[in-house]
Image 1 (cartoon, rainbow, N blue to C red):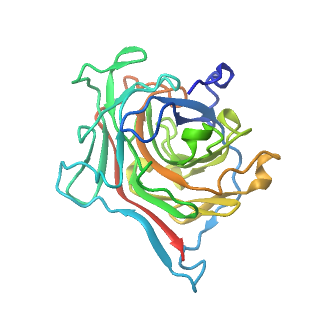
Image 2 (cartoon, one colour):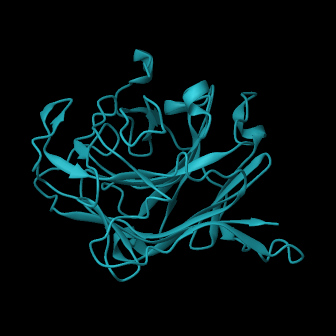
Image 3 (cartoon, rainbow, N blue to C red):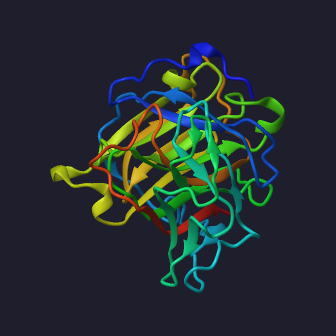
Length: 307
């Protein structure tokens, strides 16, 4: 996909963030990856979210998708649920090469998926800047699982360090035909290393993509870092609304009224994405303070609906 030059602005202040999109077909195991900038707006006051079952006692939650990542240590993710993308990301200027198989994404034998970013290049991978300096992994459910509405949740422990960029997000399943940002993008959680105590949730669509993305950040109290422990990141997604929470605390809700008259493109199927990027316009590149390897540890990913 060709990205209009105007979308590639200079790096914004720390509050700004950048997201990613596909450039080629999403139904093959390799994809060329591109990215656009995005921004965060102010969040409403946090409050405790009701669970999907509490919100409608007469309609118990039904599991639409779940991966608990149970399996032998070193084994690859379930190919019936996930596909593994390969390649680099020139438009976002990330530094990693996403590898195939279980080289950078494997189960740990203790019920977790571990996505590992390493400072290495065992395959002589070539990136937009020359010989790649880092490897990592990116997984998606395109062609395997899509969902319209529900409670989308992952429990994860993020990495730490300058240049680290873990993300759990969704793209509209029609991206292959309508392109980005018309497909829509829901970023459930993104974190960058220079903000160890803050995560971001953002919507992207036509007229509000890149630096105009609609979203907000959430910060842990007391100066705590997200890399210190597991946290649960979720959205509750319904017709004409998306609500974000961290550990059950809601920090923003978005509806068509927030889009300044632009189209709401979130009432259709989306698929899931998990990745750990290294460097790029938003997080900046690793520096001498960054240690490797770094890991995004995922306890589970679950999608439930009220049926």
